[in-house]
Amino acid sequence: MRPGLVSVVIPCYNQGRYLEETVRSVLASTYRPLELLLVNDGSTDDSLERARSLEKKHPEVRVIDQPNGGVARARNTGIRAAQGEFVLPLDGDDTVSDAYIAEAVSVLQQRPEVKVVYCRAVKFSEAGEKAWKLKPFSLRALARDNMIFVAALLRKSDADAVGGFSEDMHMGREDWEFWIKILKNGGEVVQLPFVGFYYRLTPGSKRKKTGTRQKKRERIAYLNKKHADFFQQELNGPLRFQRSWSRRYNTLLRWLGRK
Image (cartoon, helix red, strand yellow):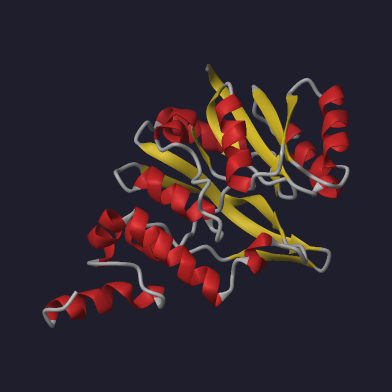
């Protein structure tokens, strides 16, 4: 592991048309040293060819090709191959500002108690862009919902310590569960006071596909099974389908002598 090196892990599944824009945004960063790990996750478009082309043009870029296994597995492949002290997971159609990585690394280097650094964000599409209104971070708020997008910087050692992203979480929001694993036993979070991340909205966005009521029920059941201790600590019991009411409902049940 090289101290100070940032490994940007970019999983890509059929995002070839956006991949060069994503890579160029990282290469425009004011921070060095960098490595970019492009993990082609069994794409059926020209993603692999485009990734290989970028690898030939830029010495910082390294391509890993694997059969399709889902975004969590692709991220984990990249994290395992990463040689850097710090990791930035970044999806293959999103972009970052030129200052984001440098400012985030500065915080992580100066403050060892901080585990995760992220920033303000924008959602964009061909129709334009709009601010992404992220809720303030706290562990109690994290127990109810996620406010840290996947493209946050952290130490590789912290990702390794929790086994990376959970590859058996097939109902979406793997990043939420990842941050719970990273933070539930301690560690501070810093949000930088500027827009440094740009989240692309596309018609086939996974976020839309995993936003159904059934997927939400599956997700809540998975989280409760895996992190019962965390929800007990923050919500006085399990996460409920009406998530914002979880703590009040659990407290009422406890007061009534029920669980």
